Image (tube, rainbow, N blue to C red; front, top):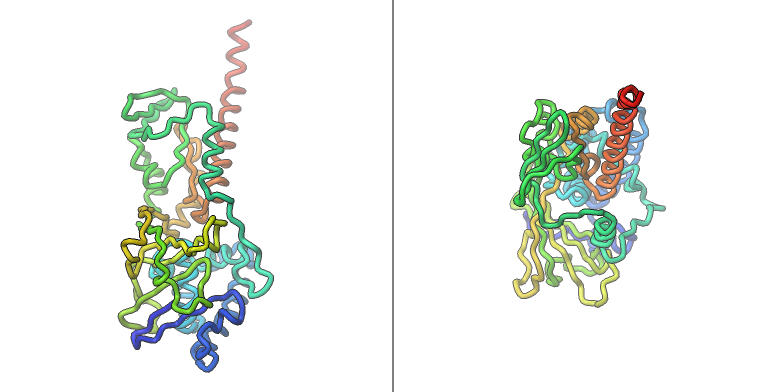
Length: 357
């Protein structure tokens, strides 16, 4: 839903024609039809960009430059594309304008977001992310919960890890956390580590769990699993204006998880309007990586860090910022560690044999 300076409210959802024209007056609005046309055109052009050879190298433009060169309408940019992208990455629309368009196109193409029909069905884990987190923890032989690491210092023969309970010695360390957190933990960060880990910025976001349906679109036909809201005090058409400092998104949990009750339950990220206090169940602060040009360039240098000074890195920041990216990065770090350990073991065999002889 989008609130125009005139007070007019745009509400629509892409599920089907009934929800696209949830506001029947949009059938007669040329601006709305142009937005729909721009969506189809963007899907074609972004697909071509994503399928190009080495798209990240072939096109270095930002989303802002791409939209400006393509003369896309403001309604398409701020009424559809930027809200969708901002919701996916939990970043303000102004930051999404600086996102590399080739990376954006490749992501949208890989996830079926450029298709009007036959879109893949996205699935959620029954019970939420805690289900697989708890299963992973149960398989760890020595999981120490509520024991934050304060410092990591590397030596030729091992790694010193300091917590509030003392200091311990390990052969290797995997820093499975945000890149800025990893950098802060390193007592002896190298220049390369500072350049790569320090290049990725993070966006603070406040999530509110509540039951206030007044924050959803006024027309229930427009209710979706993800409901973006923008409130603009003024409007310009140069695609360069910050429309709001943070993204406001209402997740309708009933459409995402099989919750055991009928009453609508929402998680609102960075509320433009605060929910009724009596409806608030919980509030949580998050930090999400911002994948601008500097971040994407830093990601290409992650291999320079892996295994150096007995240290490995992983996290969702290594990919697109999703749980699946964290899993993929974790596997990569584990395999890199095992490969390095195997090499060290093989290298030590000749000396061990010499000692035996």
